[in-house]
Length: 102
Image (cartoon, rainbow, N blue to C red; front, side):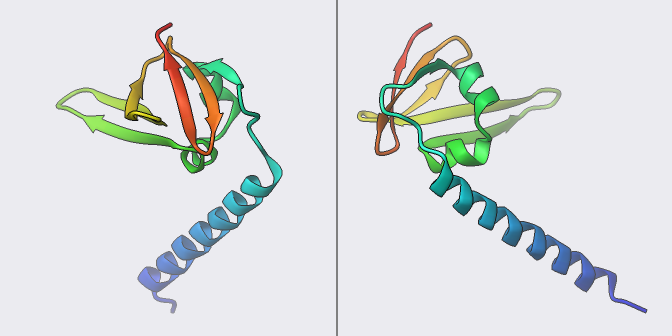
């Protein structure tokens, strides 16, 4: 008889080990060109959130009594800035972004 807790941890660690390898492969194979400009929705549809997180995006989950919202921020030259759905976001290089009101 196998230990369910130990098997669960093995699967958990195997999953995140695989995820780490996928992230490293994405870092090597995909580059965002400096000056690329898209809306927040387009960035989210084009790239996985793990890839965006490696390039200066941060994602937060805000939970209330009935509402669960997801918040995205990017690193700008002035600090971390919340981005909204209609905002135009431009990649400046070195994990820095420019945000314009949409």
